[in-house]
Each structure stands twice: as structure tokens, then as C-alpha cells.
Length: 541
Image (cartoon, rainbow, N blue to C red; front, top):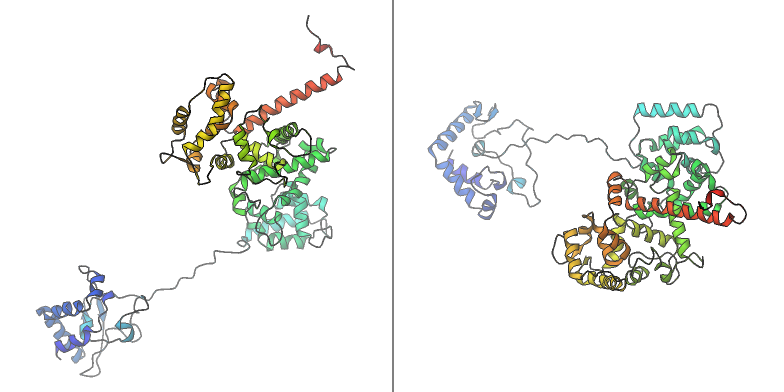
């Protein structure tokens, strides 16, 4: 057999993608289709190659086994002029997958002596591995041991009540089986009792809690599914009202509000506003599961359920915090129409804020008002303002005031924008006979505190990465806090170091509650002084 003729037949079948030519780029081979033919011809012209090919042809004609380095195959030849395949029947390796353009090998498969020494890769047929299911729409199924343990508890609680449990008897199920706060009992009961029969049977509870895989979900997802409305993918403010009504009705620390339903309602509203202020970061009034998981509301709920003193639950549920917020609003709302205008708000903090920053607030730049009354904010709007004003270190507060200062809304604060707000602050210092600080010096101080990534402007990211960002806002539009920052009371500094877990809002609310309670005590004494004389208030001389 003529080796050159064999070479000519086989060159057209070469696949450049499978050639093992590390010295030559595959891109070069594709751009030069004649190059493989030249290389193959050179390889066949070698004396060692000619000797090897002739030996293999002679062995194939004689029917001897063909042994190639790296490949072991026993081949028997039936005819003199036919060359058998180097692979047993049906065991040829598949071509490696590639683009649809393919190569000549996809349309023409041919075996010849030249392919016995071809440096093509041998690809084994991939073995398919069964991937276990990893996504479950309603949560993964419970493990058998966990399911049996849960069913045992359910059987124990439903044992003496064959017909089911009434709503007043359902609280142990909520606490022991579901491990949820006790004030979720009412809303969970109604979630299961869809027909409003007034009773939840064992089978109905097992169907909802065990069979629907609620058992295996994390606590945040369980709370989310219980509170949300059907076919909704978010929580609204109204979804929290049922659990707060039950909290007010059952918590020992809120019993004194039983005879004042108006303050019960205000307390519930304040808690809800605080929850959405801190957790609903998008600010659209729709609390998502992702936002719920990122926040600390679940831990606060568990704490409120376990703690008898509600004032120790400083996250969201503290009555003292509600008292401070509501009293501040009531003081500013002089006509008590439950709305505050710009002239009312200018008195906040003993006239601490500038008119320019108030103009931005009432322009609804940082947040759209919910009052639906032109030029006035409602109680919810005031809660957002007060939380932002008294704790400028929190993320929502930084975003609130950043939007106020960003006059052109381009996402950066320039020196011109900072100077616009500081001009009024400087004028107020001059009117109060205080030594004025030039804006150039203030700008250097702000840049040193914030250390922005790029010179010439400050971004929200720069502010969030600095612990002193709140002082920047005070310098620009809150004179009282600016002066306090410059004086740096050593007592307050030591207090912050001793209680690092408390926020600026926590410290403010505590001080303000003490002040308000003392004023109320003095007022009570003055009102009763005409009727009852207390010797303890008599002058010591």
C-alpha cells in the first residue's frame, strides 16, 4: 500500500481542534487550513514514521495483533485489502462537543493506518450523575426524626381535645410546637381556620404546619408567610396590626394601657412606623422577605415575648420610646389637628434647625409625606423625621439627610451645596455673638472627617463608611448639636464608651423620657398644691 496515497486520503479528515500541537495555536491552524497537511506530510516523510506505518500494515495484512504505545487492542483482519478499526465494535469514543459549525469529522468518519498514530485526544463517554433535588417551592421536606418529634408534641397538645382547640387554647401550640412569640397565636389560628369555625383541629394544624413544610422553614420565613396576605409577596403596615393588638392585650408591661384605647392605637402605629423605618430600606411600604431576614425584627419579637418589662426591649417595642416621640409631636402640634407645618417644626429642639433644611423637608425631597395635606406632615412623617434627626449614624438617617443636601439630585455633594446650607448656620452664629467659623475651615474639617474616595465631592458611600458622618449634618444645619460637638462633653463621651451597644437614639430617648417624666411629676404636684400641702416641698428656712 502506498503511504503517500494513504496520507492524501487522511489529511482531509484531520480535525484541527483535536490535534495535540502545543507549539502551534489552534487559531493559527484554523486560519491556515493547509498547515495541518504540511505538518502531516513532514511527519510521514520521517524514516521512523515510514518504518512504523509499514510494520503496522504488514501486521494488519497478516492478522497479527496491533500494539500501539498507549493503546491496547487485539484486531483480527478478515480480508487482505481491508484495515480493521483500532477500537472494538461499538466502543469508539465520541467526538467532544463543540460549536454547530463542526468539522469534517462530523460528516465523515474514516479509519486508516494513519489514524493509528494520530495525536487525537481519546474522550471517554461522560457518565451522567443524578443530582438530587435542591429546590423546594414550599421548603424542603422535614427529616423523619424532626417530623416524629413535632407530631409527638402535637398529639400531646391535642390529646384531650378531640374536636380541636379554641382560640384561647391555641397559645401553647404557638409557643411549644411553632416556637413563635405568643402574640402570634391569634393570627396563626385565623390563618389555619380559613372557614372561621372558631376551632382548629389536629388534622388541620398538621396539614398547615407539617405537610406544607412550614416546620422546616427558618423563623423569618415562617413569620413572613403567616403575616402576609394570600397571593402577596410583601408585608404592608396593616399586616402587623393583628400581632400588635394581641401584644397590647396580653403583655404584662402594657396592661396600664387597657383603659386608654387611643394610646394603644398610637403605640401600635409608632411600633409599625419604626419597623418600616429601619427594615423597609426601599421605602416603598412593602416589606419583602429579604428585608425581613436582613433586619433584627425577629429577635426583637422574641425578646418582647420573653421580657416582662417592655421598656427593656429598646428595638421597636419600648413604650418609653413611643412616649418620647408622641410627646414631642404633641408639643409641636399646637392646634392638635394631628398635623405639623413648617412653623411648628422650626420650634423642634429649641429652634435648632435652619430654615433651608426645613424647606427641603417640606419639599418632600427626602421622603414623600403621607399626610395628603399640602404643607403639612402627619404623625408618620414626623416619626421618620425624628428618628433621622436624633440618630444620624443609622443607615436610614444618612440616606434621609443626604437627599436633603443633594440639591441637584446627582448623587454627590459638592462644596457649593455644602456652603449653601452652612451660610445660614454661619449667620445664626453671628447673631448669637458666637465666634464664626469660616466655610473654608469647615470644609477642611468635613473632608478630614469623611476622607472621601475622590477629591471634590462626597458620596453616600463615603458617609456610610465614616462613623462621624452625623456630625457633618449637624455642622451644616443643627446649631445646637454643632456647638455640643465642638465642646465635646466628657461625660457623654465616657457614657458612649461604657455602653457601646446603645445607639444615639437610645441615649436620646432615655434622657428625654427622664426629662418629660420629671416635668409631668412637677406639673402633678403643682396642680395638687392648692388642695394638699406636702411638707416635703416646704422651704428649708
